[in-house]
Image 1 (cartoon, rainbow, N blue to C red):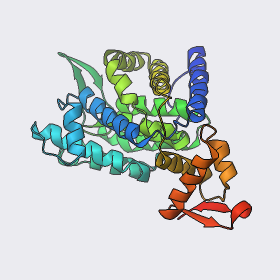
Image 2: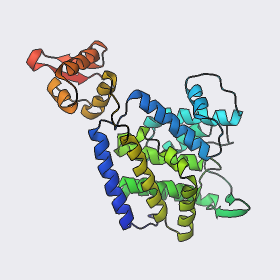
Image 3: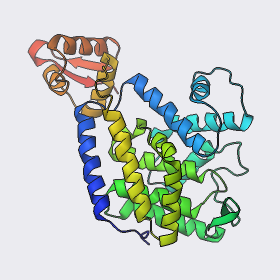
Image 4: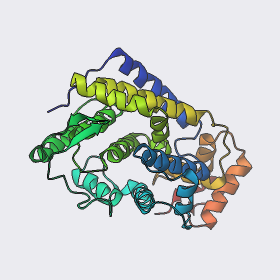
Length: 319
């Protein structure tokens, strides 16, 4: 069954705006940001996602954990951070349309934090807000068919992936398939789905915008619960994505290094042959001499194979 939601005028306007901004990101060579920016954004993503769930570690402490430095803090908080770091390192090996891959990600994310990480819960649960039960999740025997339907929707429905990623995020929160870690998994999997079509989302700190709007995030979930449709949550998350892209574009004057350009061009050209002229056509802001130095560096370091000589020279990225 297709999850219930409506495509509103607001959703269509947001999708159009996001598509324009993704075009701007690609034009500014920011769909795979420079190394230092990628690291900084990944840390912000991990910190914000954990902070939403009550983790008290600072950005500096999470940075120290990534750099294998000793950190003083709650053992649980440190383990949560280490697990989140591990799953984001593993993210390119995950299949966004695979339920088994989904369970594998949860097992990494929640290893040592719950009794059966990666396994669907075997008992009923309710979500408590203050002194009231805000949401009673579906019974445990319904979880497998519900998750099967949800992944079938991802694989077969014709709606845009931008919209389906928001729907999946909400439905996962509603189904609550695991005893713990559902919020983190919803945000992680939406990122993974978006990455499948738009590489920029791998290092776009959407979680930071959600943290900034945390109260509205939970309001959108609650309002969608009340209406029985994820429409309001889709609108909210598209606004979050739009803001995250705007934040990225605000620093588009960032300088790319030769390594950044080589790595970026590899994602564009893949396994095809290319010439220096084609490389220069993509990076219009650099000189011919800089393009030659980039390619010479890549060849000398075994990143690129060179065939031919002078005007017949062609390049191809090494396997």
